[in-house]
Length: 159
Image (cartoon, rainbow, N blue to C red; front, side, top):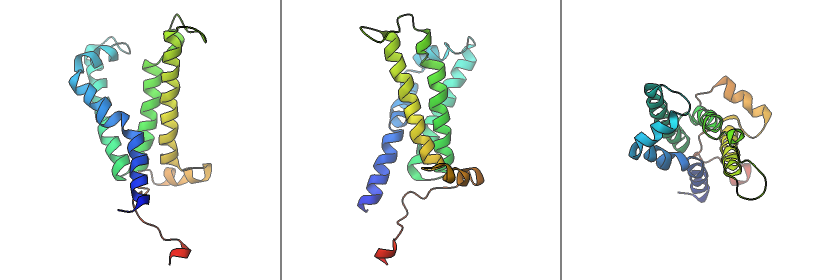
């Protein structure tokens, strides 16, 4: 295994490590608590359970897509959306009564979590869409395509 492949894998692993295994495992081990948290978004207990199961599947399947390179653009795009939705549903700093910039503030802590969700979403979007606006069209043309993250490309100097 080359150093480039190892670095690519570790970079991708760092993006998904939060979800696979940790958040997915937490949903399994603490399903009741996760369902209670999901109940904040809906009063229907069955819908709350469905949200947790759907979240588990997104975290596992899409993380594996990012790690393996199989439909990794779509997987990364899905995880970006997942990060944004979870920030909006469960990181609602604007609802905290004690949001302030100095001193103790639970609201400020939730605000940082909200921003972290969007920062991770940005990383996934770069993986899905590419590093610039011009490369986004490739995703739109073939969303199920792979970026082939572990393929070794030779430069002209190496030939």
